[in-house]
Each structure stands twice: as C-alpha cells, then as structure tokens.
Image 1 (tube, rainbow over the protein chains, first blue to last red):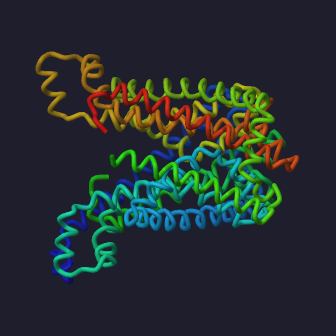
Image 2 (image 1 turned 180 degrees about the horizontal axis):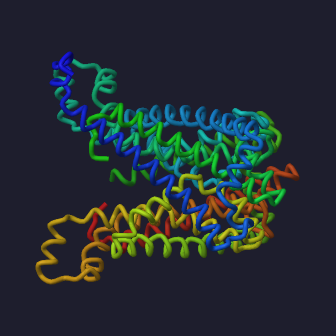
Image 3 (image 1 turned 120 degrees about the vertical axis):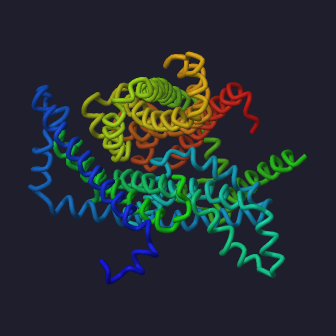
Length: 268
Length: 249
C-alpha cells in the first residue's frame, strides 16, 4: 500500500469506482441466477408443459449434447453481425459528415434514406441473398442495412449540436476544417452517436439472424428455423438462449467501449 | 422559404433516384432478378392491385391489432410499476432478460404456439411494440422533476393525481416518440413473421414470389409495404403533433 502512495493519491476515484463496478457485476450475476432459478422453479411448480416452456436444465442439456453446432452457429452469426455493424457504423458516420458539409445532398438523399427504412428487411434480404448468394457477406449486408440509418441520424444530431462559438474559436486559431472535424465535431457527436450504436448492436444481430432464414447451413437463425420445422421447442429455446448470450455480450461490449471513449459523458 | 427549398430538393432527389434506377435497369438491360425497371415495378403493382391490396389489408390488420395490444401492455405495465415501485426491480430484470433476445428470433416459437394464422403475427407485433413502449414510457415517467412532485404532494396530491396530472403529461413526448417508432417496426415484424408461415399477407406474397423467382412481384410488394408503413407513420406523427400542441418542433 505504502509503495504506491502517489498512485493512490492521483486516482482517488479509482477505488470506489472499481468497487462500484464489481458490485454492479455481482448484481447482474445475482439477477441472472434469480431469473434462472425462477425459470426452473416456475416450470416445475406450475407444471408448465415443455411445449411452452421447457425446464432450463433440459435446455442447457440440449446445448451440452451438441455444443459444436451451437458454437459454430454462434461464431458464424457473430461474424455476420460484427461485419455488418462495423461497416454500418462507419458508413453512418461518414454519411452524417457528408450531410453536415453538403446541405443540398442532405435534403436530396435523407428522405430517400427514411423511405429505405420502411422496406421490410426480409424483402430486402431476399434481394441481397440473390445478389450476393448465400454467403456470409449477404448476411452482413442485411445487418449493415439495418445499422447505418440510426447511426446517421444520431451522428448528424450530434454534429449539429456543436456550439458554433467553439467552431469560430478554433477557426480563429487557424484550424482547418479537417482539424475542426476531428478534434471538435466528431468528439462532440460521440455521446449521441453511441446511443445509436447501442441500438445498432441489437439491430445488426436481427439482420444476421433474419438473413440466415433465406437458407444457409450454419448460424443461430438456421438453428432456430430447423428447430421450428422439427417442432422441437427445447431446441428453439436453446437457440434463443445462445442468441441472448450473443446479443447481450455484443451490447455490453459496445456499452463498455462507450464508457471508455465517452468518459466525460456521465449522463447516461 | 427554407422549408420549401428542402421539399423541392427532396422531390428532386426522389426523381433522380427513379431516373437513375430506370436508366441503369434499361440501359444495361438488367434481368428482372437483378433489378427490374421502376416502370415495370409500378406496372406490376397496377396489374396485381387486387391481390396486393388484399395482402396489404391482411398485414395491416395484423399490425394494427398487435400495435394496439402491445401499446396497451407496454404503457400499462410501465404505469403500473410507478404505482407499485416494489415490483420494479423484478419486472425490469425479467423484461431485460426477455428483451436480450432479438424480437424476431421469437417468431419460430410463437408460430409453434399460436399456429400460422393471424394470432401468431398479432402476438409477435405486440411483443415488439410492448418492449419499445415499456422502455420509453418508463424513461418518460422517470423524467419528472423531484421538486414538482414535492410541490404537488405538499398540496395534498395522491399517487393517482401525481400520475395523471404530472407524470403522464411529462412522459407524453417520449411515449409518443415510442409510438411513432413502433409504427414501421410493427409492419416489418408482421411481414417477417408472415415469411416463416402464413395464409396471406405481404410477407407471404414476397416469400412466394422469391420462391417463384418473380422479382417484379417482390418489388411490387415492397413498394406497397413501404407505402403502407409511411402512411401509418404519417398518421401517428400527425396525432403526435396534435397531442403535443405545447411543444413547437
């Protein structure tokens, strides 16, 4: 303890903060266990038929019986989700910057983007699968399509909310538009952008799963569909559980990144 | 002045897209399964208008029913939680657990439970809409200023009066935003569920057309679905502006 007094003195908030984090994780784990116990207990207690809700233990047993299939599905869907998410996020921010710079472009294209979001994802998915074949990329494109729009909207809101006086100040010091963008506008837009990125994390998973319904051999969507055709409710719940794991894990990763990058935005 | 310029540019953008689409499809003589010409799609809508109208009304009925049900459940649950704060921790945990699976992933299960008729689509839409509205209503109800509550309490207002006169009006903008977002989502969820099994509706039409490789019909159904979504969205947006008369946008 006494070996690092300077460290302890310079980060007085680290101790309680780490404690808070640990307590929060412990709280989450406890809530998860409570849900698991409630699931198992309620099914036994109320005598719910396995057709509606099988016991958690039998669902876990189904996963343990063929872990390879679930692991492969998990990884495949994760890859599709991740590619679509990263591409959609990058494209969304780039479009927001372009819209900020070119008002005419924004007014011409933005309404089309809005309309594009009313196209049902499966209809779009049918076309994408036809264009790209039944490949990983096709599913990533569907995830991308669901992801970019919320990011564009929120990044644009964030970029526009920058105080014009700050821009004027930076300009008066001779900052180029590029510097203003990188040092002021994009960082200022980050909190707002991350709100959309968290939403996009869930949406890109939806895109990947629905994309797999057009026929594929691996993936969580495939597992769901096969289980439905076999009327195997336990297998459906197993696939749902793995999807929940993927969805929650991905969402938490994005939220963690947000906390790291937007360290000043304590409002959330 | 500014607004009319924006509208003009929006129309110009749409015209450019249509022109570009038509030009590419005709110019490169693209086969219909890659990209049918816009004019062919519109002709396809006209030729199949009776069938598409029937499919659209089927889907819209599912979406409306599910939307109303989901909104009632979502808003009701959030309001009930403010009256019963003790149940909050448990309910929010349970909802978060259920919500951690993407909603559409539930559709195979819901189809097994409720069959491939209209009931399964209504349930799926209600599920999707209720999540959105539960979360936005809860956030809206929490936004109330502590001091306003104290002030009203000091005048002897009870829980119900606080809810009706203070919390709900404060939450209204967020609730209405949730209702607006849910319009498009409800139609999309209905269509996605129809794709996995249905007796009719736009999703069913699209899936059948995909199987028959009839891509003019796929695009025709897409056009109709988009138009229906925009209409629904516009109606709710209009109602929102009426209800939120104090908030100039």
